[in-house]
Length: 204
Image (tube, rainbow, N blue to C red; front, side, top):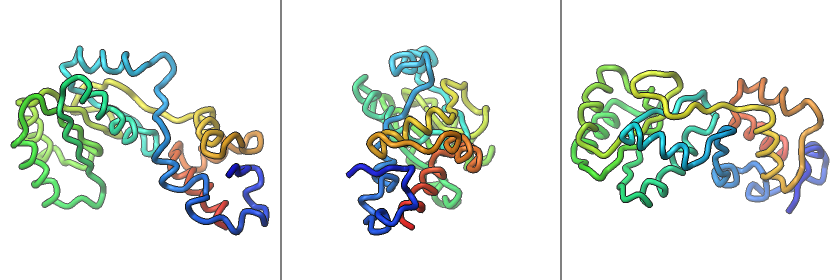
């Protein structure tokens, strides 16, 4: 079912079921990460290999860090590693973080620890974790700001990228001229928040 983003407010769309909404969570989560211009997966993997499979992916909220980390998993498996993926959010408790540290201490090479949301750890919580991953084949984390591990990639969002993703989700439609940039600016570059607004437009 093709939906025109330019017609999001028309009566024809008021009967859309959640699964028919082009901006539903399932559709958004199935989007492939778009690497920055000039960077390929081979380039990124070479960077990680040169850095002993340790580093950080840095960028603001909604810039694709989580998606990128998830899509690294099968690529690491193809190289003989055992990825151990974890995610921390603002709702993660102290007990969650203690359990994470205990789990990491049980890992060994060829395990690679992937942590989405490393900024949720305080310095006091991060230091013992950093010691624990020394016995692993690698450690790759996502962060909002630089620090803790060398940067292997910085993610960002642009109006052109958002327009490309909207085009894919809707099967070829686009926002009116200038609205893509306005939408992205309104949500401070957070593409996921842009999709939530577009979802609501369809749902309403």
